[in-house]
Image (cartoon, rainbow, N blue to C red; front, side):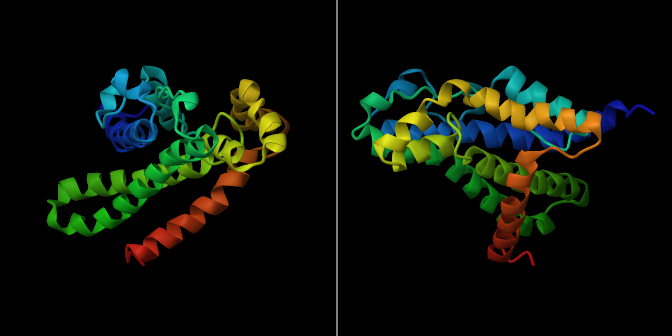
Length: 230
């Protein structure tokens, strides 16, 4: 039986809203830090802003996450328009690359903590609103932690790859940086192609889930303890 329009709208509202905020504020954080460290490229393009509309990619931020929710996908994925950064304009390009790249996942961690702390405000809301808000906060906590951990995987052009390039000595950083041209294809292969192959042969082939589930579960427990939810 197909879900009703009301059910679809409810599911979309409790998933798409947290996804939009998570991915757009992630990108905004990159722009703010890059501007602070000397590269005003994003600022000149109007991307150093907390306005989600400036960062939304119609397909990656709205349609793709919505389709994955409706299809009951085990892996929720979304993205915003990448903030342009000219690393050559930073004061110390190799060092400052680390801070610019890490800003996005750090923002997601902060949003996860804020989501957890906001659970204490639910008692002051009307029951009909508190239930909807609780779903949003639960999803926001999980989505932001997934994005933080996923983006810190050491695969360029993911943030973790750029952090690794900035941290490693040049003889190791250079070959890793060259992976950026094929990095997205590699990530899509791990996230989409291998799971589909696994479904066809009856084997669970989901390496990203293996890499993400454990740290996300651990972080949820840590943040829950910090927010005194347990």
